[in-house]
Every structure is written in C-alpha cells, then in structure tokens.
Image 1 (spheres, rainbow, N blue to C red):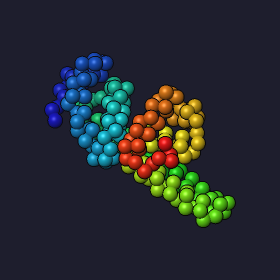
Image 2 (cartoon, one colour):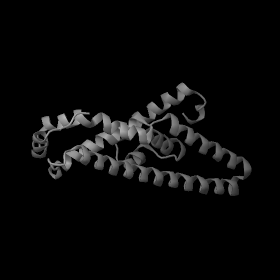
Image 3 (cartoon, rainbow, N blue to C red):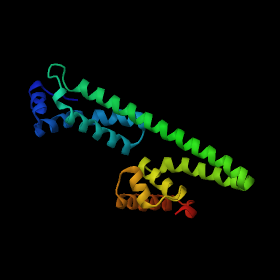
Image 4 (cartoon, rainbow, N blue to C red):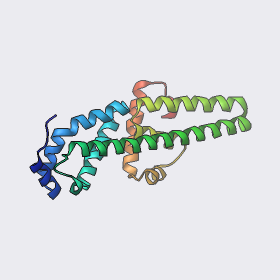
Length: 185
C-alpha cells in the first residue's frame, strides 16, 4: 500500500477530485479486504468500502495532513463496520422474533402441519441468506413470504419499485438455477 503525501491531503481537503482518486487508488483494496474479512461477502464489502470513501469525501475537511489519511480511513471503516454489524444483529433479532411468534401462532391456529410448514419456511429464509446478496434476500422475503407488494417494499427500503422488481427477477433466476425453490417463485 502506498502512502499519500501531505500535499495530496491538502488538495483533498480543498475538494480536489484528483487527490480524492489518488487516495482511493492507494487505500481501496485494503479497506475492501478489511470489510470482506469481516463480512465474507463481496457485495457487502463493495458497499461498505464505497460508504467509507463517501464518508471520507463528506468529512474531508477534518483530515489532518500531519496524521495522514490512513488512520482516518481506518477509523471510518471501523465505525461503518460496527454500524453494519449492529444493523444485522437488529434485523436478525427482528426476524427471529417474527419467526418465533409465527411458529407459536401457527401451532395454536393450524396445529402441527402449520408448524412444520413455518419451520420449513424459516429454514428456507436461512438458506436464501447464503445464496442471495443481503438486500436481494430481504426484498424476496418481504415479497414472497411477508406478502408485501412492490410499493410497500420500495417505501420500507427507500428504493424504487423498479429496483424491487429487478431484484426479485435476479432472485428468481438465482433460485431457479439452484432448483428446489419452485413454489416460492
């Protein structure tokens, strides 16, 4: 990894995009590897790395040329990773709570068959999380399992209906290629 000199940092602080690109060239790979090591997912590492450099650009005036940019980037990356991990834990708890409530309701209302169906669904959602990128999996679950329409999903995730549609198409293609998911397509 090459170092970025103080002059480049001064230019970055002023908003020079060429200096920003120099910083990206110097540190992107190491930041991406940090995220990949901690998430084991290419898409997430890409997203979090981009968030790191976006935040660097946003707060570039806080850079200290004497301390350099590397330590500042690492602090940003650590903060972004911690936020992401907290969000994942929160979502996991929500899904677990939802699943447990649904399992209990299904057993009380529909008996053992409904309970087994819901347990199969829970296993399916876990498997989906392995084969689909996180956001795509979430959109699929909201659509096919929770029964939300494109507009509801778009509002919930602050994305366009077209994005919802495209992500569902991609999820269907992935699942069709893997087989065994027919009734959910």
